[in-house]
Image (cartoon, rainbow, N blue to C red; front, side, top):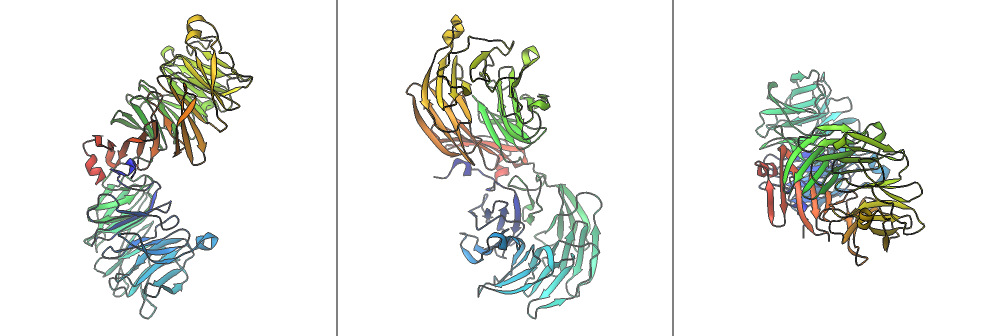
Length: 610
C-alpha cells in the first residue's frame, strides 16, 4: 500500500531539482534531482505519473523529445540513457561508473525530433552523438563547453557552445561547422527559436540573438548588476525568451530582445534548471519543487516534534506551527535549524540550530524572545516545559531560564538533564551518575534524591508526562522506573525498579501519558528504530524500524512524528501505523490529510497541488 506521504504531494523530489525540461507540444515535463531521481509528468497529471532513478545525480542533463514519448538523461557518473516516458523502460543506455565516469559528468543533453540521435555535452568538453538505431556512438568532438546542446527542427543541425563561450552550429550531414558571428558576451546556453530562424544565446552577462541562415549577430541585451543570468527558456508560442536569475525571471520579446516584464520566481536557492510550460515559467528550487509566478515555497522538513495537539516543523531556515489539523504560523529562524520543540501548552518554541545559540520564540507571532547566548552553541540537548527552557551545554553542565520569574540559572556539573512537561521538575545526572530532582525556580532539590537501582551511573533520563514518574537508563543499558509521588508527599527518597535490559545505543527517551508506556529511540546510521515498552509488563510491545533519525515521540499521545518529503510531517500511531500527514505547500498554502482524506486545508491548497 502506498504511503500517506505520496498523497496530495506537489512533487516527488527530496533533493534539490537540478535539471528540468518540458516539451510544449505534448506538455510532458521531466525533472531530475541531486539524488538521481527523475520524475515525468504528462498532460492531465497534477503530480508525476512516473518516478524512477536511472543512475547518479542529474545536473542539467535532461531532455524531452518532441511529442513527449522519450526522456533523455545524463548523470554525474557519465551515464547517458533514453527512456520511455510512460514506464521508464530504457531504449538506450551507455553506462559509466567510478572515476572514469565522473570526468565526463553530463551537463546538457538533447534528443533529435525523429528520435534517431541523442547528443550530450560533458564536463570533459566532449560533444558526444549516438545513433539510437544502432546503439553506437557516432562521434565525439573535443573543445566544447557550455551547458546545452540542441537539434534543429529536422535534426540535421546540432547547436552547441565551445570552450570560449561561442555558439557553434554543426551540419550533421557533412559534419561541417556553419558560420556564426562572434559574441561579445560569452554564452553558456544556446537554443533554436521555435520557428528555427534564430539562435538565442545567454551567459551571465546577457542575451544575444543570431540569425540561423547566415550566422549574423542581430541584437543583444547586456545585464547590469544583479546575480547574472543562470539559464534561459523559450515561450511555447516562440514569441518570447525568459532569462532566469537567482531571484527573478525577466522576459524579452523576440526577435527584438526588448524587455517585456519581470517577476520573482520564489524558488529557494535555484540551480538554474527550469522551463517555460504552457501554464507559465517554472524554476527549480532546493526544496524539490518547481516555482513560478512568485510562489513562496518552504524548504524540506529537517526536524519535527510535538506535544499534545501541537506540532512544529523545522524547515531548514524557518518554522511552521500546527495545532490539530491547521497550520497556524510560518516564520523565519535566525539560523539553519537542526531541531525545534514546542511546549505542551503551545506557548513557546525552542530551536537548536546547526550553528549558533539556541533560540526561544513566541508561538503567538513567531517573535524571537531571546537566544541562549554563545555558550549554548552546539547544545546536544534542549527542553521546554511550562515557563522553563533548558539547554545542555556542549562544554558540560546546563543552563536554564525560568521565564515567569525572569531568572536564569547555570550549573557546571550535570552530565544529562530532563524537564517535566509542566516545567515543575528538572532532573539532572551528577558527575558520578546519580540522579537529583531540582526545582527550576530555585535550583534547589525539589524532592529527596531517588535511591540508585544499582552501583552503575545513569546517563539518560525522562519524566513521564502528567505523572510523578521518572525513567532512567544506566551505563549498562538497564531501563529503570521510579514513582516519585510518595517522595514528593513525604520527603523520602524515591524507590525504583528495573524494567528491561537494553544492550543497544539509545539517544532519546520519552515517558508517555498514563504511565504504562515509554519509548526509546535507537540510532542506526541514516535511520532509527523506536521501541515502545510496556512498563507494567516489562516488555517491548512495538518495534518500528527504518524511521528518520529525527523521529520524535509525542509524550502526550505516544504518536511518532517523522520528517517527510515535500514539506511534510508524517504522524504514526504508537505501533507505527500511518495516521496523518501535515504538509506545507508552495504559495504559502498547506493541508493535512489522513487515510480518510483531507482533514484541513488553506483556501488555495488545491491550486498549489495542481
